[in-house]
Image (cartoon, helix red, strand yellow):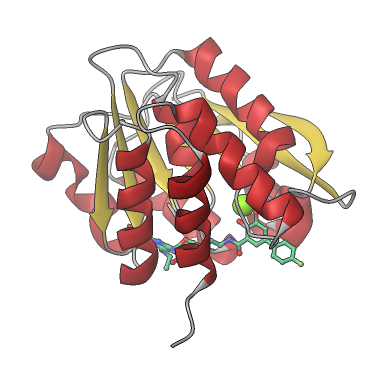
Length: 214
Ligand SMILES: CCNc1ncnc2c1ncn2[C@@H]1O[C@H](/C=C/CNC(=O)c2cc(-c3ccc(F)cc3)cc(O)c2O)[C@@H](O)[C@H]1O
Ligand SMILES: [Mg+2]
């Protein structure tokens, strides 16, 4: 029977990456996507920008919306300080199952809470489920038409504090026009665009980094 692309990606990780070595997991996925099959991971070029933001913020609490196969989860978790927690939401059971195994192969399961469910249902439960007051960093990489509603939901749930950072993937391709319009014109955010390319291609894309001003 036919395997899925995430299943083939996991097989490439288990074949080519070293258990407990996050960088080798990231490299194995990037090689798979360049040499075998394109997939919608944030990728190596935008991934370096993601790494620099994570390192700069040095967050204790991180929320990722849209785990997919766990590529960005592994990049972020591998850079977190010892007590830090990364909560990642994924509502497709097949993708969640693959992501759990990718995260485990990297040896990062102690830093990551993968919640199988929709962001709209779980953002309001973050406090009660994990005792999280606010997030220091949020990485948005799920359905592009959900960036704006979920950002407003995080505001309403009091999950953002003065200085919280939102980092959004794909603001050019596929694009998140309503989110960009809101975040760049809101007096409650200070935004900065990081020009880059769509993962594994020469197509223009970029990340939008926004600081919540309270
Ligand atoms: C319902 C909204 N809430 C959600 N809550 C939890 N998980 C969610 C949610 N939405 C989507 N997901 C999951 O996130 C993942 C979806 C990500 C969507 N990403 C994209 O569409 C995307 C698409 C492209 C792209 C770019 C150019 C192309 F030609 C084709 C595709 C590139 C990217 O970097 C992307 O991130 C899936 O695993 C999905 O199950
Ligand atoms: Mg993306």
